[in-house]
Amino acid sequence: MKPPLADENSAEGLEAFTEYWFELFSYGYETNDWALFTPLTDPGCRTCVNLTTQVKDHFEQGGWIEGGAITLNSSQITFEKNTAGSINSFIDIAQSEIVYFDSKGLEVKRTPPTATMVGVTIALWEDDHWIMLDFGSPEGS
Image (tube, rainbow, N blue to C red; front, side, top):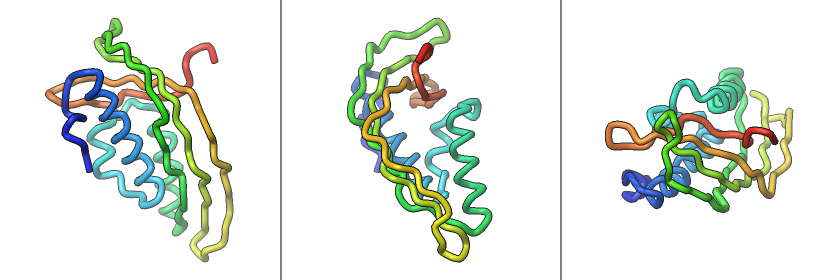
């Protein structure tokens, strides 16, 4: 459920939105249901498109996925707009193990859990709500 704070144009609101957004991402991994995730995600988010396409393709072939929950361990938000008007935040996330099954229920792939991944999110406050523009590794890493 979306926390009310996630619709606030503040550092706290952005943090609540980011946590909610990763919950929706996790939900998509296991269900292939992107209905709530898509409107909150810029179609130009290359990382998002790459990952969601992989999941969608797997489900379209009759398979399914267990795991993949993403947890926001911490975030560092300075709440200063960059030259494009969006806000960059440093994040520390973890992702649980991901197990891919084919249409017959046989395990075809397993991705080990990651205890911590440092990354950056880029979000924009637009029309009274947050939009995730992109996320990934910080430049230079």
